[in-house]
Image (cartoon, rainbow over all chains, first blue to last red; front, top):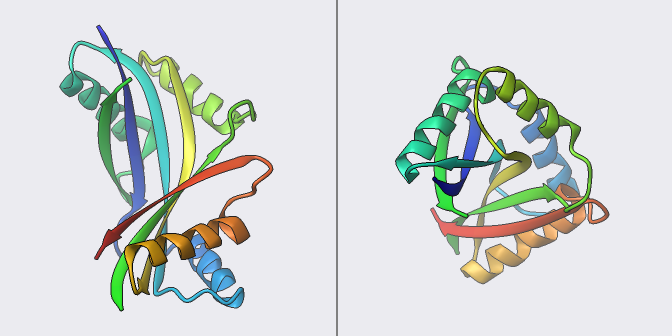
Length: 83
Length: 83
């Protein structure tokens, strides 16, 4: 078994309203920052042991499907690094 | 001016309690998943125009310092990609 860290990034699907990101974008503009757009996402860093990087990726994907992401409104991607 | 996307990742500093991550970790374990640890972070993807990647990185770092991160409890890092 090898120790991996799987990083799951959960984003809102294109077209889903994101009032938190709009508020943050507006606040940055009021502070004088020049930006075109801002999107927010959740990131989960999961330490787990697996036989292979593909095994770790598969399990982290299952965690996203079951709990971390809501497939109706979210997309997600998984990156795996050896620890 | 070149179009860049700066990705700011905001994490709790080591030692700061993260009840949301603890809850998520517990829920995954109850679903039968085997994991050692889970950390959560916020990720902001900021589209901006700048003269150089370093300029974009500097401005995104300023945004993190001023608004996106709370320096008392958060660390952050910035990655910049050309769009």
